[in-house]
Length: 434
Image (tube, rainbow, N blue to C red):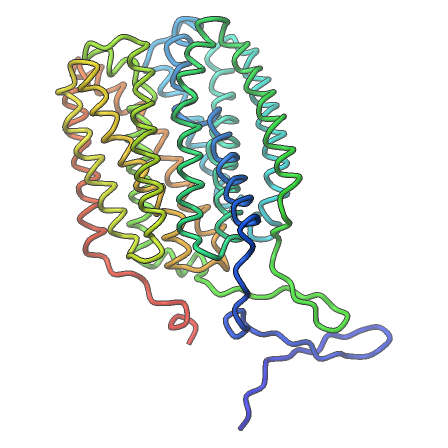
């Protein structure tokens, strides 16, 4: 018997019915790789958009922490709790946003996200008390750290199919460079002007860069095939969210994101205080983001270049072991040189995960529902960033230093590294659908 592609009958008001081909994407001949210029353009756009998430990232908010404590007359636990509430609320929309990206495409979402983020930054410049700060944090974490990051990386993951792991590695490296370098400039701007002026400058930057760039991006809605005179959506292969959640590897990747989100964010949020307790000045502490950037770039690019040829879980395990090492080493920081060494290890841990995370989801679960799957993982990571600042603030309040909280926290990434080594990858997509 000859195999025939699946068909369906679509009623038309005049001509009756027309048979419409519905074939799986993997049954079609592979498309040729895109031009080098197009590939570079997409990767560059993704990197710039990721870098422009800095107003909502912990690194971008960290220089505001101590000035806000003074300006609003609140304590460190108060601002950490405000950050926790805001970040948890921001995380709740990520699964929904992931489904929106799958349905309508990331390009449309980025235009709206950029405009909303600029408005949030403008509104934040008028806050005068902790409730207004919490509301501002909700917007910044939800739209800046969560929505824009998810949309930018999903766009590249879906649009770039040739050496996608390497492409996502470059996107992560460029984004991490912009995010990590932002605190140095923000700290100087706050010293020269004030909190409100800096937030207004950031609003103008977002509006002038994110929205115009998004207008030039290609449409990335559901893939479509022209058959006769009708256009119908193709079904891309891939795990659904419910299927992915039943695999151990999803929780390994999500657990790594949760761990990095919680502990690296907690350190970054209180970095000036943490390194100040170790004897560094505020300027030296803010500059610690530079060595973090250096190794984050190297790790992201290095793993991004090879993630298409290796099992991504080894990159995840490496990231977790580096983070554990940084936390154990933190109490021994007592000079600018040792502070730089700490920053190098911490940056490498973040860069290693950034270099494999998005590519790992594509490798294991396909592109068909990648936005929804990464939306759940992003929600986990974003929720974890709420816990980190409060964890270190309470640790300082209860123990009088950051030494014990840091040493105890090193256990979590070590456990995730062990899990990454033993959990088996999920079944291949073709086996899942057979």
